Structures are given as C-alpha cells and as structure tokens.
Length: 336
Image (cartoon, rainbow, N blue to C red; front, top):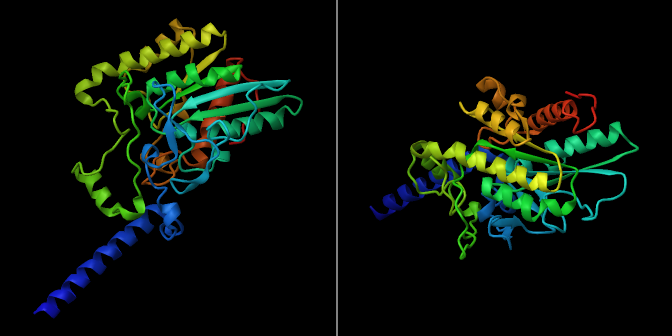
C-alpha cells in the first residue's frame, strides 16, 4: 500500500511539473523557460529588484541606473540617470531638438527591445531624414506609473533636461491608478522570483479571480466601476498640472491616449480640456485599434498585451504625422 501511494504521489508531482513546464513554454516561449535568470524577469516592475525609491515621493520609484539585464524576457538597459534609454548628456548639445517622452510600460517598451519603442523609431527616422539636425527622444517611461507619477516625473526629472517638446502617454491602466497623496513611509514591495512560482496557477487565479496574486501597482489601488466617477476628474487634474508645468517653461506639450481603444465615452471631454489648457491632444489609440484579430497582431503575445514591434511602428507613424501637422516636428516619410 505505501508503495502504491508513493507511486501515485510521484505521478501527480510529475504531472503537475509537466503542466507547469508546458504552460511556461506556451506563455513565455522555450528560450525564456529554460533560462532561470530570464524567466525570473517575467515579473511586475515594482517586484523585480530593478527599481529604487525615488527621492521625490510623488514619483514613488525609479529604475536603477546602469542596468544591463532582463525584464519580461527582453533585455533592459538603463543609462547613468536611470532612464530606459541610451546615454544622453544632461546638457543639451548644440543644434539639437530634444523631446522628453513620459509614460508607463508602453513607453518603457515592456516586451520589446528598447531600440524598437515608438520614440526610438521616431528619433531614428528624424535623424535619417534631417542629417544636419540632431533629434533626441529621451524616455522617462516606467512600468505601472499612474497619473501622479507622470506629473511628478515631468516636475522633478524631465524638465531638467531642457526639452523643446514634451510628449506624455496616458494608457488605460495609467488613467485608472487611484491618484492618492504619497505617504511619508513609502516602501517598495518585496522582490519576487517567478521561476519559483507557478505560472499555471497564476493564470487560473486571473481567470477565476481567486485573489492569491496581487495585481496592479503594489500599494496603489486601481479605480473600479463603482468609482468611475473619479476617473475623469483625475485625468483632467493631470492635464491641468502637466499643462501648468509646460507653460511655465514655455514648452509645447502633447498628451496622447495610448491604448487599443478610445478613452470610453469621455474623449470629447479630454479634447475640450486640452483645448482650454492649450495642450495638444493626440488620439494615438487609432494607430492600434481595430478588430480583436487585428489588435492581437499588434501585441507582444496573448499573455503580454503590450505593443509589439509592429504596434510601436504604428504609433511612431501616427505621432510623426500628427506632430508634423501641428508644426511641433518636421515631416518625415511614413515607412509603414
């Protein structure tokens, strides 16, 4: 009897291991699954060990400087200022048009190489089209930022770079993060190691809402349907504070809704708010929206809904066209 029980238990264990391994390969790919270091990068940024508390409470956390590692299965590198970008000098070089790009994971480029992000594509195309002028698009994108962090980043970090244009990307996740005043005792959540966690169970947790895995930004709530009346006011607050910071320095600012769909039934309010504040509204979602089948071709994978290389290229095309029409950037040929 003990022998049969042992065989049964061993079979169950092997079966669970096989299910877990198969699901990891299915969701992350074989190359990532067999590399423990790369698989450990399949995490949310605040729990990845790649961030540190910011000296500015509104910003909460920032990427650590001089990283050269993995995140979400792809290489991630930061410069000496902790920006997910190549090295730039803080002092703007001569004959340079500098753009600061502020956002969350879609701007950081979660799931793609940093050279394939929409702002990197824009920088490359402009420099090729105008070899006598230097264009810099400096990324301040950090995964899971809410509106408070976007405003704080512009105020405390991005303006120091003397930009000629500010681009702010608001995603549907960013907009829904509850804007609360930072606590004096803010701490980072504990680091986790996905290699030692069950991906199959996490998917079941998401599917059935079991609540055994924390979602969203640790320590930050996301507005649900019962608090939707707070959503538009906090977006308008962000518009107002971003506009005030930009206008104080006399820098043009464009704020875009970067998502796979339009901003619900309140897009007209955003357009009107932008006009009242002298802010340029960009409907960047139109570069990605479409049928479910079309949208899936623009995602990294069914398990990582961030834009893939094609999605970033579409956004770059849209921004280059719209910003040229607004006389904020020179026109370049569309390579789509």
